Length: 455
Image (cartoon, rainbow, N blue to C red; front, side, top):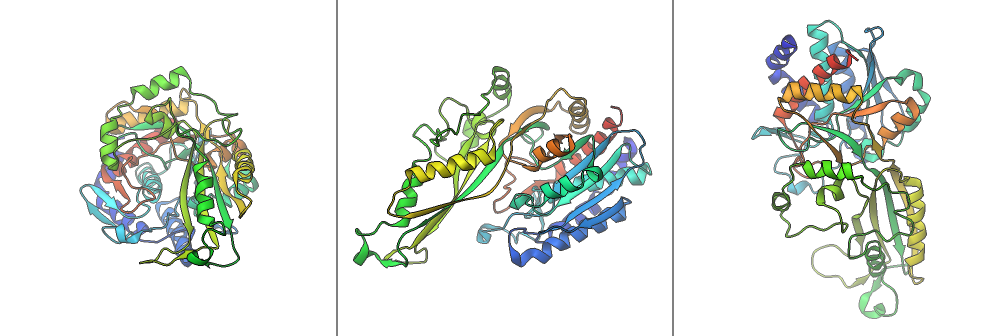
């Protein structure tokens, strides 16, 4: 372990320089203009995996963005871990709110600022560097390792399910290790044992066959924006409860033990409000803020459009309006079923004066990992060795839909070993990654491979 620590310590500046190079690639997966950049990021990863000594490095083509694979299978009957992550990133809008250009990495106050720094380029790069450390110091790896990095996580992993299904033998493993989550707080390493699922929908409302003068036609024709606004307000009641018929039918309620564990977490509601600069909090009645954001289902409008949005005034009655709605799901909720219930409910409440179209964009099932397994205990040991404190257990409100696919197709549980922080601004301007976590994350992962070899 000491030799690994010395290697990581002596190469800190080089690791940081390489991370900056990786983060400089604008691999935005949902923008066609950046398609070549996404491929460039895949090729960069492939070259780096080859350079550090991984074997069978290959870029697999898909109908969308490529998948990077590599392995090192020389540990005999030791366990096999599949490392999963994504090299694509979210769009940068609104770009004017960034302090520095989003793809020009800047180090300030112990953080590296760039799009993708925490989600997920910085975190998958920790795995690459921990592999490098073992390969350079020990001339091999303590367990068998397979790596799969995709370029479509931010658009729903649209081609990864098919790839996994067609390549079960290639990807067969005992565990899946994922670093795409956060620690509960700075200095407090964490084991995330549950993720919410996702059901993402779009509503399109169409009124007249063209934009109309609001003075001439206002009061005679229903306005699609007004109709859409009324639809959205009927999706939740005043107590924050979702009103879609049948939405809660399959929800597994929180157990007494789970609620006790949530209550043990060091959560400061006033600090939380101050950090977000809000005057109050809102959520489902009868649950704490931690329970609402991590273990209860939600519904939120993520975007809305229609009509004139330029400077000044334009008295227009728009022809169309639309909105994107996301629902975070908890154990036993199925995204396909929820999508059907959503569409049925929208049809029920939509006025006859407009045409309404509902489209399911993408979704994923929730996941839960048992916390008393040997692989989780090994992760606890590695985190404690690297950070010097006992880690806590918590559930995260975000979604990694592919986790459930790994379980169903490969029979492998996922160990969520994340090193981001709640204030890392993922999906927002000025995304950052704590460099102390970056370096300790490399050490943790290197220790974890050793701990898994003892199972």
